Length: 210
Image 1 (cartoon, rainbow, N blue to C red):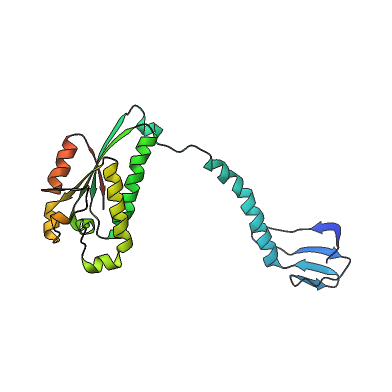
Image 2: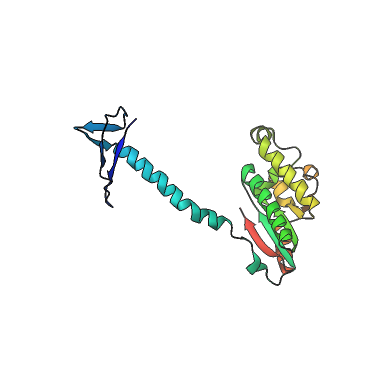
């Protein structure tokens, strides 16, 4: 145990930390303190650690205060009762496909929570169609079982929410996907580009993700 005098001097500059020194009435056995003729200097690393610790406490309160703010889309959604959007989905890996389908589920939920009726359409083109089959290629199924199951669950959930999902027949032909194996709740359409143009002509706002 170290007994300290009431006098304690701490020195610091913006450029560097100087030793913190004090006088002691007893010798110390603490490894972090070195005794030089009755004058003890606390290890600079220990001092630096203490300063970092105190700094983290000083910055924590503003962060907590910020987290209490209400975050929404009220300004953008003001005056709207319905949101119409068509998503162009063109991914080259199942992991990204699974991730964004989950995000779109959250987008639909976000509209509902903020008092709007979402009218969303998803159009799948390109290599993405490989991840929408009930009979995926063997290697794909083995290496990405988790992602494919996530995609299947998201498609089911989105269908139950009333989201229309279209799969481009040109893409299924190019990538050798049997149209009869496309996941339940999805519709195969003749040409994804034609569908996208048509939906936009009807007032649906394009959201391309790839």
